[in-house]
Amino acid sequence: MKVRDLPPRPLLAVDPETTLAEVASRMRRDDSDSVAVMSEGRLLGILTERDLVGVIADGIDPRKAKAGVLMSPPRTTVGADEEVSVVAVKMVALGIRHLPVVDDDGSPTWLLSARDLVGVLERDAVGPD
Picture 1 (cartoon, helix red, strand yellow):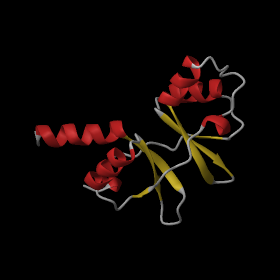
Picture 2 (cartoon, rainbow, N blue to C red):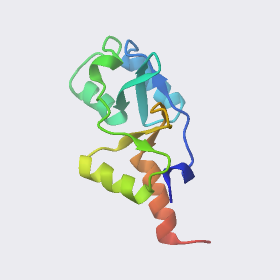
Picture 3 (cartoon, rainbow, N blue to C red):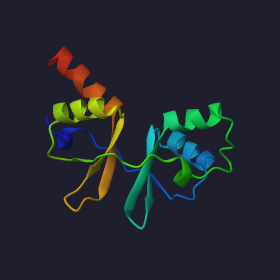
């Protein structure tokens, strides 16, 4: 199975100046576990639920802190033609749970989450109906 065969999620993107409180609100509204931080169509980084939990645990005010300060730069990207099994191995090897899926021009189209891969693995383990 290839990445393109997975159901894509709309790319949830924010500006680097977006407050973390607004990021959390948008993630909740869109039922997303990650958000792309972008500027002028370019991916700068990713913010995840785990990042937001860390902010709260560290006592940082999410109404003042900005997405561009907390984001993690993307360590790698994947294309739609990559095999899901290879992507899963890549995520485990890098210790990451989210990867940007990019088009032929290198522009992000959506963020692939480990939970997307778990769904595929669960379906494959159960087998066809």
